[in-house]
Image (cartoon, rainbow, N blue to C red; front, side, top):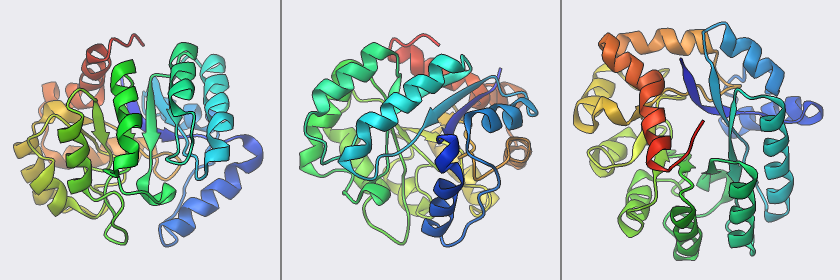
Length: 266
């Protein structure tokens, strides 16, 4: 089994536009694949991926319900998918929406402070995080970007301190281009990291240092599809020197343990 814990999907009619927007946001970073559910499965299956945590992000409050409905519909159509919903800091009826998506079968929530323009530890989000913890919905943060201050790992660490029962995943080794901050504030905590959009830029020795401090048990394989290709991302992990047992843990066992902690069956 392999679980891709970080994959984005979009409706066919907007997939190309969505990919272009992502590329522009990340200073013309290449988006290699199409971004549709079918394309995700086609590419992942070539690498032996069997499950995908699929998500999308609401950039304004009006998009929340539509995106959540889309993810729900794709999960019903594709049993390979584990759906994470979206919420926006300006979405007022967050408690009812979180309850709705939980009851409908979504397993967690993705937030992107840089896209959504809110500091990860802003007080107005505390009731939202508390509700996620109550419902045992893990939250996946986009973590870290040296161009912005919204998702700095130290703010995600503050969320963890204020909401210790909330299961948190900090994407991109805990801090996309802010790995020093991730090492200082998040390594050694109970926060999970995913491996997506990282090894193209993070020096191998620094990655190994982070793994040694944080523990391989808290790393989750992820690709950030449609930006990266599954076969290449799996190959890139080999430089980290994981044992076969550790590789199995990163590829799927750690994810299964996270879901078990939340009472989630997949």
